[in-house]
Length: 78
Image (cartoon, rainbow, N blue to C red; front, side):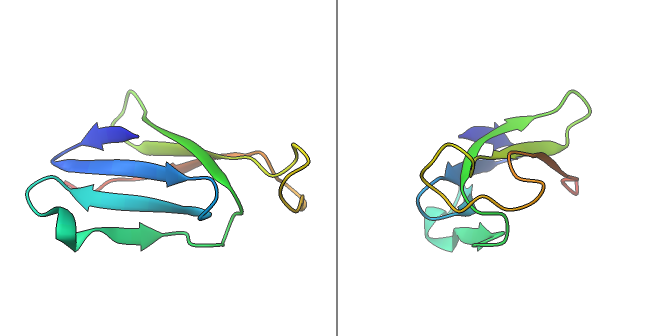
């Protein structure tokens, strides 16, 4: 889990998604990348403010695909 600009970003290994939870209104949380990249293990904020997350499918529990276990980058607006 990582915090940026009023939002918590939570990696869901089992749910295979990244959840964005606005701190001001947690009921407005949203899922991103649901089942697009497989298991999402962790999230971090890069030095330039982008959001990084890692996928983790080749440890024997997920379904490994080409280019698995990647570091993904998302530019956060604002």
